[in-house]
Length: 253
Image (cartoon, rainbow, N blue to C red; front, side, top):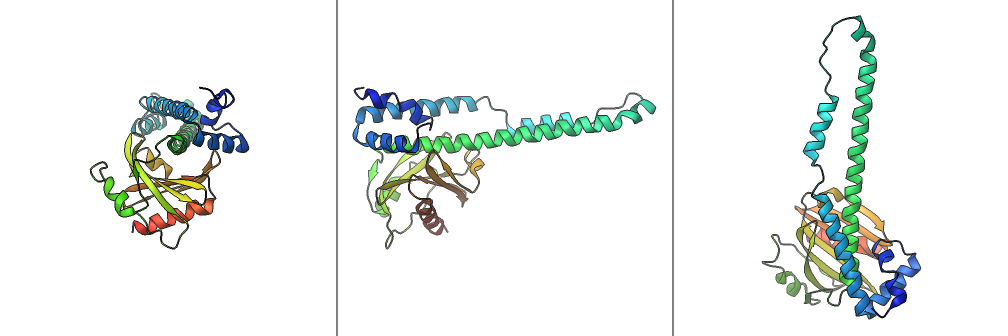
């Protein structure tokens, strides 16, 4: 790479550690520098693969629930007598502490999993826009973009009408989120780009629930509708993200 100053900031950008001003400048640099874009894309792809590999050894929800039941189950009494009657309150309190601890642990795991999914989507949005070819089908006509996905995805979807709005359809491509095939649609509004991900709402993505949040200076809105998971993400205003999300909600009804 020839951009030594920017090269030192790639890891911080991938991990979301740049200040807002630096991050905006770095993103603008990626648009004009193919070398930095390619390097950033490679590191984000490696990060996604590491996340995916770690999930292979993640305990299933059934296993955690079974362990919680086994720990919470009362132990059989070997001796019926005054000693047991005197200690049963302590035993019950101990069981309750364990159950509460397990519940907190499960909640923390679910929160971490949700943040990992959000992080993966944010990485995909950034790396895709930083690539030399952010879309495989280039068109502002939804009747051209939608048919392009036929045969590439195990589901179909509808795109909203943009007449009378500030949004423009730029194109789309097939991607993978949580190892599931998905459609990635790119829209523009003013000087900002928005990514819309559409996939089946399967385990992993369903952890997002109905979400409106910000991550690494991006606004993200996600919801489930008709068995599909929709996620809109961009560095534009939250009102723009919500407006496009509402258009997709209406198109999907």
